[in-house]
Image 1: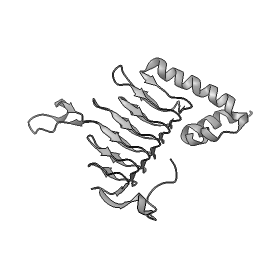
Image 2 (image 1 turned 60 degrees about the vertical axis):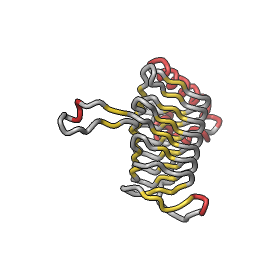
Image 3 (image 1 turned 180 degrees about the vertical axis):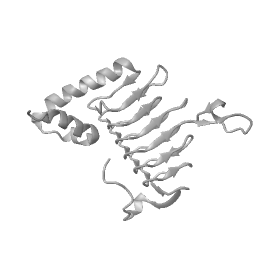
Image 4 (image 1 turned 180 degrees about the horizontal axis):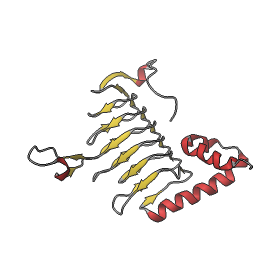
Length: 212
């Protein structure tokens, strides 16, 4: 049996989608046609709009009912194994690596241009009530939304809770739980989170994965 190299190449792109944007010319025609089909399917079955030259892995799960749209800018990428439930708005050149889980709640998640999100990051833009006189699952949820600025780098397995705003150019360390607003340019790590630096001071810190 002849190996199905193209199927394997598609799988590689799904899990490492940055490779899509540097494909050799001999692969570009079939890859672009494949992506048009994948994105057309998502747009047909959910309330989704993709910008130009995006990559979306067919192995990701996108859910966007009317009023809970998912909208991307140009040249965004969403890797395999992600779960995204709108409302979610991505700027241009936003990267979401494999295994991320985002839910926009009622107020939505907004992510600015050129932000890079590593694998297995969790963003939930809602919370349940926690009154002691009723089971949590019976209580109403509430949502304030999550706002992430431009040129932000979010490390693997970080978590971002409802109501948080992350400023432009910030860096979030691997495994950090972001429960408060983050200023522009801040470097944040830990749980509970703490600010340990400022990108403009060029810190030499090995806190983050190379991908994304």
